[in-house]
Amino acid sequence: MANITVIGSQWGDEGKGKIVDWLAAKADIVVRFQGGHNAGHTLVVGNTTYKLHLLPSGIVRGKLSIIGNGVVVDPWALLHEIDELKTQGIEITPKNLMIAENATLILPVNSSLDKALEEARGAAKIGTTGRGIGPAYEDLVGRRALRMCDLAHPETIGAKVEKLAFYYNALYKGLNAQPFDVDELTERLKAVAHRILPHIQPCWRILDQAKNDNKTILFEGAQGVMLDVDHGTYPYVTSSNTVAPQAAIGSGVGADQLGYILGITKAYSTRVGSGPFPTELKDSVGDILTERGHEFGTTTGRRRRCGWFDAVQVRQAVKICGIKGIALMKMDVMDTLKEVKICTGYTTPGGQKYDYIPSSEDVQAQLKPVYETMPGWQTSLRGMRKLSELPEAALKYIHRLEELIGVQAAIISTSPERDDTIRVKEIVK
Ligand code: GDP
Ligand code: IMO
Ligand code: MG
Image 1 (cartoon, rainbow, N blue to C red):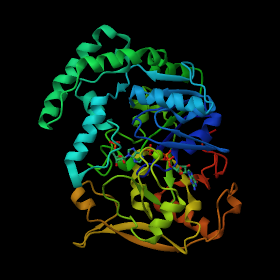
Image 2 (image 1 turned 180 degrees about the vertical axis):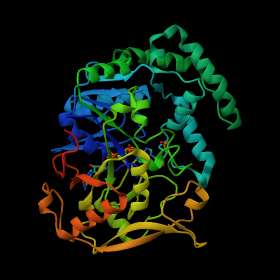
Image 3 (image 1 turned 135 degrees about the vertical axis):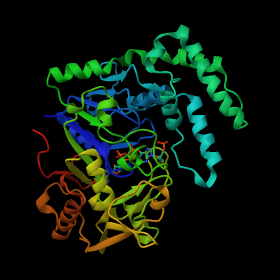
Image 4 (image 1 turned 90 degrees about the horizontal axis):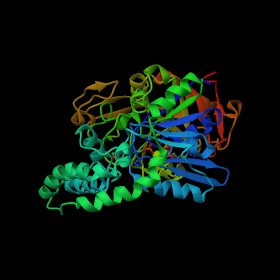
């Protein structure tokens, strides 16, 4: 099988974990390439539910799982997740989990600053997950971050932490917070190193060897295109690039290795945290989607905002990322609706029309959706495994989405369960 790059085409939580796990049956390696434990990817296999934050979803099938250089890793969160999965019978060893030696560490100073800044923003908060993602990426581009490879040199960790303290303590002073203790953090890092170091590898070389051996690689995105720091609804975004080309940068492979770009796409829209969401429903239909879709965050437990499918938004994601086909998720959540709506454009109170999402947050805040309405299918799709089982009205909805976004649904998902998945067409040979 050729490589596949899986990304979220909306605001995250589209069902990437489920599809990566399903595709992983035929893959050799699964690679995470950005984000950190802000992600929450859910896999349901029979009676067991796995919730993954940092670990690539291939770990559940025992596939070689790589945390690429583009990921920001909180070592304590990682060890906690490894221990949790062990209790669910998943064996994690240096043979099946490798971490790039040039991946950035998330440290307690990052998460405490993340939370302090959110508090200071008050009503204008971004609604981050509080995991320290933004500050850790800032440290990386600010050239003061500690990276995985630094754990192998206990004698110089203290000096590196000092460099961080120089920067952070100036910030903390401005926030009237206590300076952080250099010695304490240094000792904590030295103490954790022995459990992490056996997993550290130059992962770009492992992936190069895999290419030479004709192995199949799945690149597992986190978040979604609208949370991309460049292409998303800035500043209400995460601090990494979530678009498909980041898979190359964040794992150390050539851009020609990404293979088929699969956009994981919910049959409606959700967003967690603040920021523009033109098709948001604040009525009983929104409540139905939240409740039937169990739209509560995997990472923070927050209620996700729900709305109609936004074809303008997904079409933009398709074009920006070179998405070749989508996996259409959670169709079953809409089963009971009498009618369903699709956003096909926007207007502003000033009478301006848009067939794309403009970059200005001021304009984004004004966008009002223009809808097309279709009859609902009012039949349970839950658990369907064949395209021929889908009722006419559901097929019409899917075909209209395909027409509007410009690519086809290669996969349709009808429940959280691994095998309740319709393969509409072979995406790669
Ligand atoms: P991810 O972050 O993109 O991996 O998505 P999450 O795991 O955060 O959220 C998706 C949620 O929807 C999870 O609870 C999945 O178990 C669930 N899910 C995935 N596919 C389907 C589906 O087709 N139908 C229903 N009802 N739930 C689904
Ligand atoms: P998965 O991989 C949905 C959102 C947060 C917040 C913004 C910035 O499960 O799809 P951050 O902590 O990253 O600085 O928060 O991004 N966010 C997500 N929303 N799914 C995710 O991941 C998310 N990861 C971050 O809610 O609005
Ligand atoms: Mg999620």
